[in-house]
Length: 252
Image 1: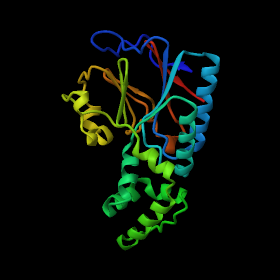
Image 2: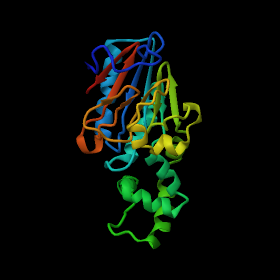
Image 3: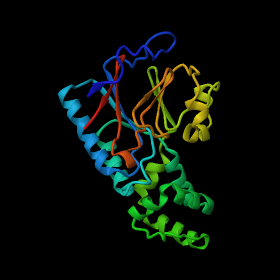
């Protein structure tokens, strides 16, 4: 584990450093995208950290995009469900989970999902997908996915939260629309927004911790922290540790 910022001069909420309630620690995990190997290593690191430094209240917050692109989407969901039964966890919805659920009923969504990593997810559920898939094949693949998707996975996807907040931090998958109160954000923005949010210095009243847009290193701005380090391509799954007024990165 190492300190992310020295002094956190860049982070201010109402002219003070952001913090969590006393005796509370949050482990915020970036986009996993089917990299079960990285998830397992990170969970082990979290467990080791908790054994070494016990705390009264600990919480793991996962910011979405658990599936697609990597080879082990199904196994990743199994592992998250299992871990959620062992630890206090918050699982947020990513745009990839939204696409996967929508693909069950909408052929257009299914086709869009295939273009952004759904092919790899389907393969992890044992569904063969031809390289040059055509529209007429989609209904049969939809049916196959419906049959292959365990009820536990369907319920996991369905119950994912859009946002979570604690103390001076607001956790979400993609970000939030500037000039709009956090309580009035639209789901589309929470799951999909990019440049309008990323380029804005707007003070949301909380520090927004998010993923969705891959960066080479954890990105810290005055109003947000991006923890998506492109795990499926880089082999680096990020965990941001927040405790009191301190921020650190937990590495396996």
